[in-house]
Image 1 (cartoon, rainbow, N blue to C red):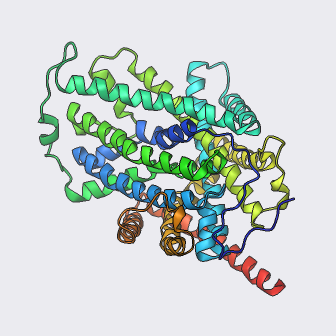
Image 2 (cartoon, rainbow, N blue to C red):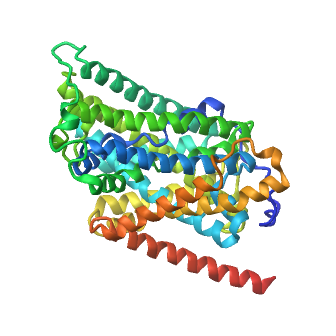
Image 3 (cartoon, rainbow, N blue to C red):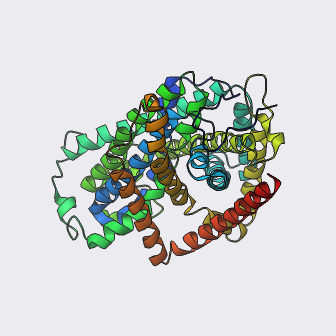
Length: 464
């Protein structure tokens, strides 16, 4: 049995019953590789198509917003490490309703997106081995990663370390080859200069509105940064580990994203990009790399499996933390001898597997509604992270200043800037016909969770 959770007004760190099996190298690579996924390798083509070379500015803006959120998360997680991370922080800053809401919304987001990743990886594998149907590949992936998450947490860490290392290595190699091509060093290439940056309508062919549309197209690709702060609670020295992971990740991630976009739009005319087609493949084909499509297929395949693994881990720890605080069934608190919340893992993979079935059977009906319902949830989660940090920073300074090992830059001004940026993205979504359904469905899902949180709060007050 677990002790009752600490009072919401207490900032004392909770002693986690989970294993401390993650090493610094696991967290550092998780921070680097957590957001390098299919959204970058494939989805960036849609951003280039609407913003042109101005997509570099779009990524700078979206990346800066993600960096600010990550810094806020790092500050709170270094001071108060917990397996529920920002859900615990929201509860301490704003009350039980906030911890309940952000925790369940994030869990819902992860288990639905997990279905997209499993199905996408299965479709790639089916292309390589057509004799094995898509559903069978999904089952194989689910079994493998469930087994990895049910065993010692270091297995999750090793999987993610090597997955992330491959993704980071692929981007570094891509950047190196692309820069050589830009300067005409590679065989059969000539220096391209600034022709593609200034031609085809100039650097901003669709004006500022194109850059704004580009932000909307790419901002959600930065989702996934949050998992490293959840994982930090299962390391030997959570406060130090999360601080180092955040410091090493934020600038390098921005470099990978912005650097990639810059070399892509320098090498190729932006008008040649097609949404749904990987601009990375287009560049590799352009500079004469044999089998570019298959190379990128392998990288995307690894990225999808990496995200599946990380989302299963993150969702299980989030629902476990909710159970610790009485916001989820107590039966999920069962921890193995090795410190793994096995029932929480199985609950998360069960819902994730149900989502996969919906995606395979009804991709254009039931599952699309589920996907729309989580489309803007990341922004709502980020918003609560920022508000929590505004409330907690002063309390940490007052009650335990020695724990402020990692501080938010220019507090509170940049926190308010981040909140304004999130509000601006929400306004963009409501005015964009393609994004509006996602925002409305996500708002409805959030409202439903808030109603449940409110009802629970009333019952708890009456019982007190």
